[in-house]
Image 1 (tube, rainbow, N blue to C red):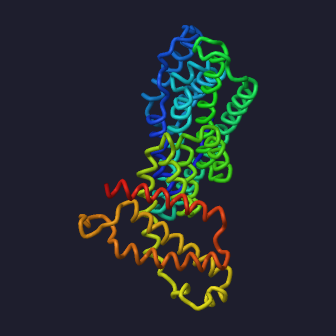
Image 2: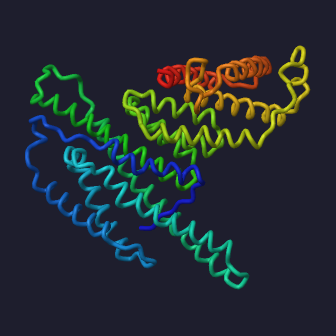
Image 3: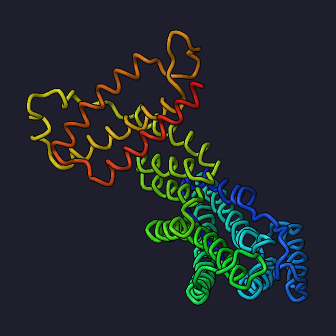
Length: 392
């Protein structure tokens, strides 16, 4: 099995999500006494085999010839897949979805991407005679990564299809008894476990699509995960990463806000949000504000703009809007507060007045879609809550 990926800097920074995902969403071991607690020797045997293979993969040094590692990964992949398909309660309590992702795919993807990055640096510093050799090596690694990702997606498509079938087959009416030992209660518990596993499989498939630069498919997989368990913040964080790849800072801010406001927030979004504000500020520093187009009578300046000019104006407006909310999230200083690392209240009020005037002009010219305006409203709610926290 081979793997591939070629994400930009945003993806590299946010790959920390893969590691945090394992820590922050690890399922708790159940203490309840129901039929899922009955020892399952077959599952125990598979788990023992998986642990031994994981140990071999963890102790293996990175080598150019990955034949042995590929053999271990393939066997581990088969073992963990069997657990996911046949021994569902044990798969959930023993964190099998994350173990499959981390040991069989995420780690290998990271290895290949690191090697591709190293070869890219060598290529830049190579002599004319060595360019062809370095270029061929980099292209070979990129092909290996592409193949690996494609094969991984095939497996995840298969597992997801199986779980979708299970959920439709296991749909049952509400139990007549709340007794935890009641068969229908156990069926409902199994259904919840299946949904939790499917939720993670969808996120991991979305990550594979993202590494493959198939952002539309990645977005659909993350969306499906969020609809399955809307109380979880993780899929919203991944949707924010996709928005950053598309250079949509305002949309990314919206999804990070959703991630942090979810009943079970994905805390990595907090640091990702800080990086978003930083990169947005840098972008603003490279793009000067145009003439005060919003101050013209009857919006005459905008009416004369081409479509491309209006698009540029909207992009700059949204960047300023994100910057303002970055200030809100840090907090706003007053005469009674320490001004260190917070925004001056007078400057913030002045910027709000400017953005409000721009917003009214853009609405009048129908430059902002309904979906974007709704996202901006949600961002306002998030900023109000964040500024309250920042200012105590």
